[in-house]
Image (tube, rainbow, N blue to C red; front, side, top):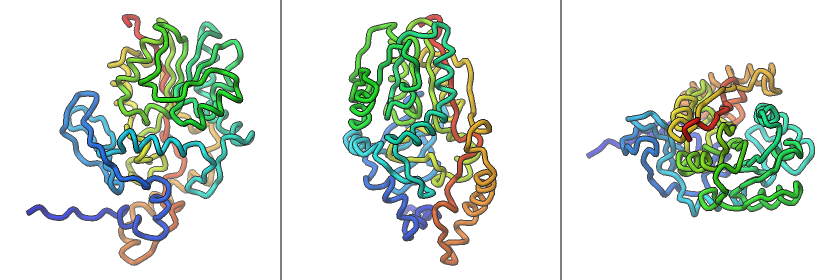
Length: 328
């Protein structure tokens, strides 16, 4: 008879009143689909951490991390139907992508993606934003570009098409078709971690791109110090939507497999508003609280989530600039 698995401190925290924030934000659904590694095909995986019915696992053969079990596609679509509605973050701040202040803030967050589009040699052409959301990136791209968007969330697709007067396809990228060598630049801002089979999607994008076409990918870094310390409390962990847990090494390997060459990797933090005195010291305070969480719970000390969650910090995200390989 197998011994019962020991309950983690995060699971204990979920059962507290203050831990309900995670239940309300992420855990309305039960994970219902097991998957194997898409990079090497192995079914051998080790558990990194457990997030209620979800598990973050790492492939024993190639090291790719992903969620398994995870949401089935049908259940995932219900999550996307709620995406982009005004919501509060872990610190209680409201975010509404339809307001001018929030759009300006997000546009500032995308400076690397925007600048690497503007400095593309042709200074114009066709650009596709995969997972275009509320159209922040496309709005910042000048009119010298022919703009296209795709999004799985109906509100986002309709909103962006309406305000920017550009073609936006609503649906899954697997069901979308463009001509071969159609795009000069393809942008994916916080999208690849959402895809159910990112390797096949990258190969699909490669066919749509012109020779020497540029691919821009922004992604949470699950190899960062915050991810390693905070685990389930990593602020970019989202077990429903973030189903592939990339680090720079794993995404470089996947891009190479899909026919891309990585040209540069950015770690935006020090030149952003997130590099500030308050959040810098929150990293150390919250790290201390996270490490001592089992002891706190033992003595019925339950901290608010903003005292445990990973704050913005260096390495939390990275941006990859890649180019279509010569032989593709």
